[in-house]
Image (cartoon, rainbow over all chains, first blue to last red; front, side, top):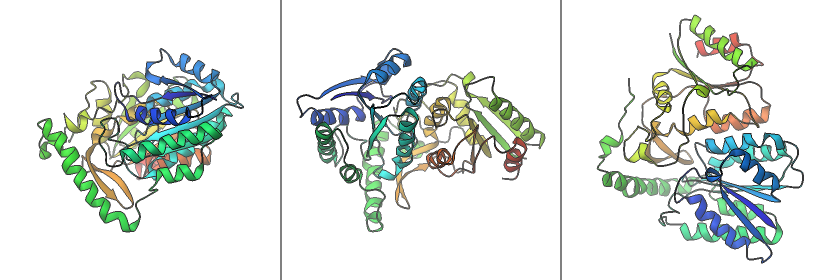
Length: 221
Length: 172
């Protein structure tokens, strides 16, 4: 299979979406006949070019970071550029990958529903949406669960490379936890307070910003 | 009297939706509210690039200097915010989404557990009362948009009269 991938991260340099995609493609290419073509959305000259790439593809993966619980604005612009293809994509496979910092899968579920709707609008064959939280430290190589995250996406890529489908149980397992279970809430409260102290506070301190200054309200009336 | 911000994310100048937004704006003003209108298609608003400057370098202030600052000031100023957009490809316009991505200076980077999930602490001690106005939408569109925008005050379409929507804003 020839898979066309749009990396829709708006970041100019290193990005977590790309780290996941490279591992996914590794897994996908375990089958020798498979080919993957990767495009960075914000490096394509125009949205017309993006439309053309999408139109010519056999199977498409749209990969993105979650911005305010949905797709970044530039990805919505891309989706709007696909309007001429509405109802004309019969037989084209369409899948999505959504990654973000918060740990729980629930944050991306409304967007997943939208992607199912979008696939219907285009008349694509919806393959599925890979959802993974806790990805904030991937591109800087920091994060307690990075290895599990990378192995997991590699395996999902391998499954897709063999079956051209995503396994719902594999995706659900990868996205866990859906929400924080009651028994894990106090552990998580502890973990986030450590993240505040050691991750965010350390970066603020590096920039010469005190905790008090970090709470600035520049537009307060 | 209320301070009402109307963020108009309609890309199409000549449309029934634009007429509806104009009518809603004048009805809201005539009910003795202070209305501030921002028409996104006339503004220069770039994409958020996830640089975290607004959290870690200049707290509360975005590194990109463009018209988005008007929106942020408007959010802090307003008692009620109307986000108006036609439904395009089953979702709010990219104009709205671009601007909405860049409200993260309104939160602080620190994390907390809010019931059963992670969330950020707010930067300002205020609740943002947001009403979403669409041109038309099916129930599943409304379900998706309301979940993505979180706790919205309302989601309305042009199926309701501008008078009804203005009344609701006035009495919120």
